[in-house]
Length: 290
Length: 163
Image (cartoon, rainbow over all chains, first blue to last red; front, side):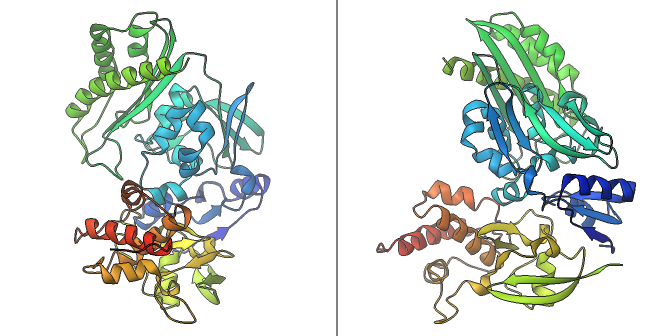
């Protein structure tokens, strides 16, 4: 690695001021499990490393009946995976977190880092998309909220500009009779990036799918919503033919590439299978909740 | 160019040293402190060989900047045996008795990851052990024995007899 300057601010304000001062030559480091690999491979070579691990007030999981869930950006993936609160209220997020990397990586990696690294395959992203999450971004001009659907702009790219920092994740309460599931296809059981990841959330009214949200990972330059696939199911009763049609539509909405984990063609086929599986599991979850 | 003065607390000893800001904890442990029990294999967080405990929790030392480990308690494999009597930790004993290592490169990481598991969950199931060690690769493929060693060490630590 090349030499660089390391700073460890103690507050969000100090971090923002340092990031604004150093501009595009700076990089935020928290868990380091993505950034250090990129630095070792010389893909990313910052002159200034702003280590935010000491900002302890960014590590929290809070919940209340009105506002829903609030998760600090420095909360580790492992804390989310193990949170009994997230398990009981937003299980899909714990489920997605539990598929990321290995136990030791989950202990180091943070939710903010997983999102800001903006890998098309980021496991938490499709889950957060179907949950309707928003992220809070702080900068010199104050704070703003951005829908997770608008957060990613390309591989490794987000709406965050230099001098800004992702501070919090907000997830609204789900309507009653909702269920959600994330399914991930990998080449081996543990520690692999998704070939395809699919998340589905359904809200039931009797046996009618009142609302449906579907999101996909690793099949486009960013994690994406599959809105055509959602529309096909909305307001309908679940049946095999409709589900197949929805899975096919999602496949059509995906824009996968060939890489070491799978061909574009295989990924398109997988999308159909995984969307069907995710929707079925989401419906099962919704029916469990009485 | 940035050389930092660091104070690292490793195995109960305070070390003052100079290191590049980008030096990983694994590099500093091996090259500055001569604690070569910590292995660097993949050097990108895939294999778990470099695992050390920081404040009791397993951490990949190749994916941690040394400077970020300041003011924390770092435990490496060298610090695991009893510092007064020199007697091995039960997990180390189990690995010796039940042939938990073949080439030995994954062993320090395996043992420290297992220690964190047993400290948190003294009576783990086999699935718990396999899951906890899922980020530690053994290229000799000795997983079955390693799992048995951890379960046996758990028994020893709980004061139960091993058959």
